[in-house]
Image (cartoon, rainbow, N blue to C red; front, side):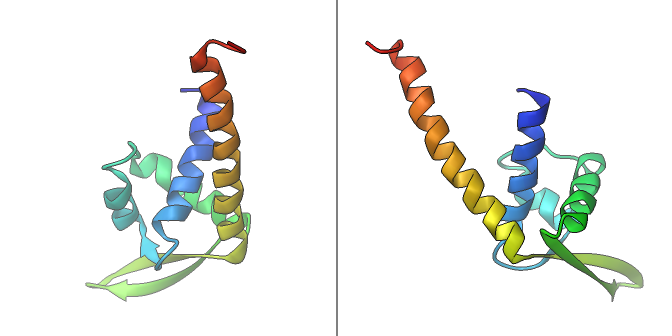
Length: 104
């Protein structure tokens, strides 16, 4: 898969994983693993990028003697998911055209 496409796909997957409720790194990885391969070294830069882009907010809380960072999606993050879904609908039309053999 193209690296840029995968990067965008992973970002939207991370946003979707926390769309319903806030979450933290390990849980996000656990939630995504059945659908797409993602490691900690991939996830945390994505989380930082989404946070700096205003698509996530973060808070830190103590948990079992350690600090855990929880992430919550923003309206901008939800808008990114919606834009992605619209783009995928267009992509499906094009994909159907290609797999049909063009204009046949």
